[in-house]
Length: 231
Image (cartoon, rainbow, N blue to C red):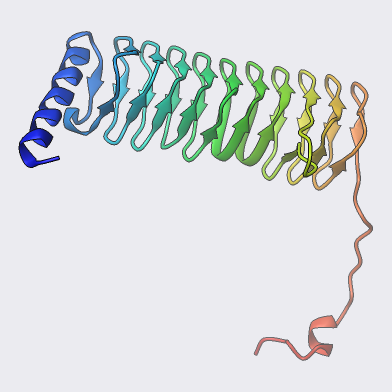
């Protein structure tokens, strides 16, 4: 591509952005948003920050905030949802949900309304119910998460055994503590609790607490005996 072709392409891109601006979409920097194709629909009041890339069939509702360096491909975003520095691919997000920064929604993710998907959370081929939260550092794959579920830091849905993928289910109001592993397929019934650090390999009844930890030991003077005491 020579300079003249590049310049023409850039003018067409900005012209397209101006058409959205005329319909009530706000651009922090109209030259730094990339809307590909002709299947993008953005409602009025939505704000697009620099570095946003929209590809394929994308629908974004009213009064959303799409933060810098966010890429959305073939997805639907509900009204008043905020996405910061994240990648959303072939997924759906409801209304008044907050995503990111640095979240990754892979194909088949269906996130409800009033949810929180925090930093370094990855969701794949899963339903995530209204009001549920995964605030940071978790992997949710091939699972059905109910409403108002709390997923702690470092939770992993262990969905692959090297040959097949398996699916788990988490009931409404369940609480999954930090650094827990759910070895699919398992079912956590409504209102169940998973203690931090547990590896879940069996179904958990409604309202029950699941605890799985090895017994800890304290070895007095171990550091000095090994000769690694810092001076």
